[in-house]
Image (cartoon, rainbow over all chains, first blue to last red; front, side, top):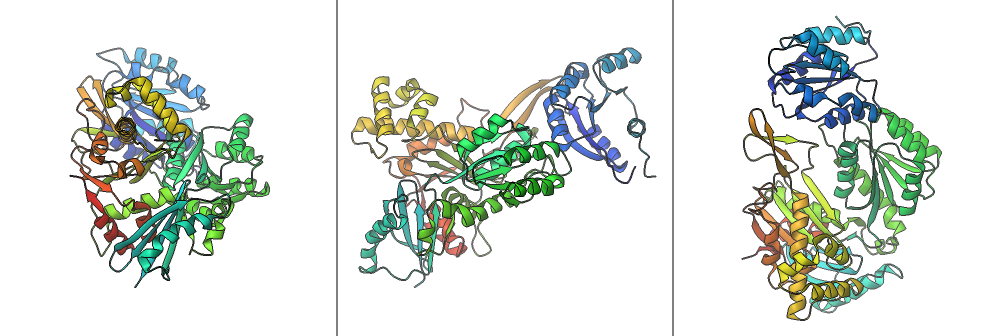
Length: 143
Length: 463
């Protein structure tokens, strides 16, 4: 990473989802990668993501969802961010976002249309998202 | 003999407490009418006159002469932050814990009309927070620029994003303001840090507010006005709960202070979930927490109590007619020194006290929320879980003077019909019958062990 700028990421599991293990693993991986991680934990509401991002002046919001209700929980997040004055913040989402076996290309499109910059299917390794974030912000990693 | 004179300059009465420090014994208590408009020493003199007989007609040379004050409006503050649920709430908690009366709370970027409002409120101190450390800087800087235009000569305590603190200080200093910068009340999103702001507020109170309230004159007789009265009560509560190296404390506790203008609730407890499978949500709560209900008071705020609770409920509690209740409440509002005389008046006062206690503790306590997920029901806790708190202490005029204080204090306990409100379930009910808590908080400044023994001796179980 660049010497002078450490990216701040707000991380959390959205909705009524209580999957805490993946959240911890992500926090660990992202911190190791040199980001400042603001982990708001499980069962986080859209407002909590937005408030955390406003107060910490975050660069990106990372949403995960594992219980299949991601689509309902994420809808309107971008609009709320715009309302809160952080409309341009980067947003990433990943996990078991929908119920049942659905075509991933379709699902991804839906989340991109919802205002996310990137969406990740089940089974994505943290490194993939880390590489994307580094690329999206045009920064060079420390090692 | 080591003697201490402990004084509470209240808005109506000046209360004095004389204590034998070594024996941790109360020698005498008395009160005079507070005379802040003329000379604060007059009311004090009246009270001292009353305790003279206990010393053979001559006042002794007290080793410690300490005072707290809520006279002349107490410590009046405005709290400003960024996000309502985050830094605004943290700032509010810091101000309440410092013993302040909160006149207004503001979030986000201040507007010109809000600056006018703040000016009109005429606060003693403006607490300016916003942004976690390294987080948002723009809003607190914007707010500092706006506040620079404030007309009133107010002191600013800045407790926001440390990366913006220097700039904020500069903006306000250039505008000729008195500025104190302290640590952020919310350095990280899940880390509340209200102590440094509380200390700075208290220091400001000592240096400036005492002077502004005309209390400086009393200082020549005293060793100083140490703190606002609610801060003294919170200090006493903390000492009584924690103890010190020499003497053990009681452990977690809750205090209900039922007054004429407000009902204060203090809790000394971490308040973590006591049941398994409960997830904590939201901003962490301060271990020593104070809430103030400005709409629940027995005299000055009796009309708002009537409005909040409703005459129907008061009628149900007291068994009297709504008309009678309304008339009495209007009377005590207009003549705040009224004390109940008839059995009927006692019934109404009791009903008011019960309703105020009930609601104030409900607002102070945490709640459990059940959320339905694809995996079944999940319990989420907001605020403090006080169900296991072992002690509940009642204080304030109406509780202390009531023939059956237990009846009132019981209203603070867990209610089966409100299973989600995390009130104390099996707390031992205690009474501050000598009205000693503020004095204990003062004495704790110089003789903590004696103060603790005094509290343990005179706060007695209600059975």
